[in-house]
Length: 295
Length: 199
Image 1 (cartoon, chains in turn brown, cyan):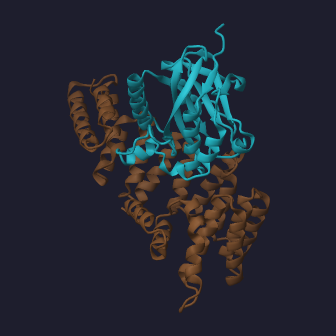
Image 2 (cartoon, one colour; image 1 turned 45 degrees about the horizontal axis):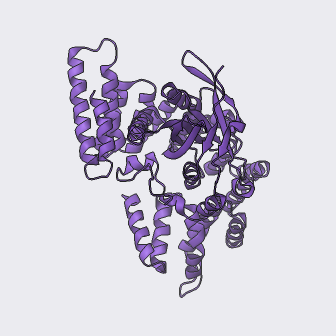
Image 3 (cartoon, each protein chain N blue to C red; image 1 turned 60 degrees about the horizontal axis):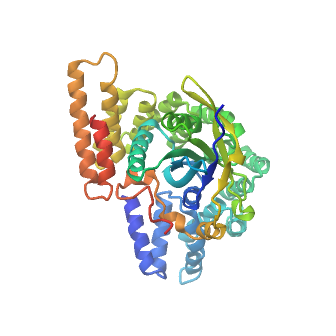
């Protein structure tokens, strides 16, 4: 439960704001979990960089991870000068690195200079056409512009023909389809994700919600149930199971047996929701929703 | 022909919407405006309920609207609008058959004076001290589908709007303390109505 440990770490930082070791740990967890918390990273990055730059053992691998982390965070918060400074440091240390070339392209993207970024990426790919990270940046260029969204989707489909096992690409494509309300295609992408990572409840949950949106209540309910099995406190799945059961009861041609089963599952979901909300100040509002669900 | 409603937006609602945008500056965010209809001001937008910063899908939207309607009943207010800030800088439309128009339609079925509020990505809110919100009101309706018309002159800030407070809120880390419905679903003890956020 990395997310919870982050909250705990931040609480501790609040109590001891000068604890550099604690700060380094927070930065490490942010990197490991790919959590987007960019203002904080830019604000506190220099403290860590200073503490890692000198010392007995000289600059370390961690130093360069932090510099890259601050670079990306600075792009995220439109602090181009800070980003440029980190980029220069990396360029000096790793003069022939294609990663640094790609980061240079990302800086141009952040400045809105998509053509220059595209040139940079094409140069990298001319040297090594199997560089999948750079190929994906070309797709990001397209994704960043609303008018080029159809091209982004097309290029991502092309990419996935060559790199079928790239889970992050399937997720990205799925999310692009969701942006365009193309729920069937989004569903296909999430099916790939579930096949690749069957125990990842984020995918099963999102798939259930997509199926529900398409009116496929039976499939939706199965995947809400599966999500609950993988992640028992999952409130979204509890609500999803309740809503799907209610929707199934309202469908034409529902038999008495079906209705009994739907009611059983509905009541089960409601019990789960009640216990999850039990000690929260939200109990009243959730009770009202439950009343609506039961009616 | 019905006269066009005027919409007056109060600080509480506006500031919360902007804090939601700031918290998830890299994503599309949406939410619901609640307030009161009638009286000399037309529609008064009193408060903002932050909904999602992930893709809006049917089931959780239904739950959110149920909870919001319940809360409105208790407070004697109603849903008066749907708010959205698009993810991409050059995305300046509510779109047809988009999330905005679908949710706007759905809300309008029960609240016929509700409007769509689109955040203007290109506005320099703090620099120009103007709302940077675009108002879309119902122009006509046919078979349950509403067609929306942009009408920004019908949207004004409350009469003694304190811009300094808005600037102050946006330049601190107040936004980290706002909870939206996505946050609430992850941890039900988080109150997505944020009643004390701006106190």
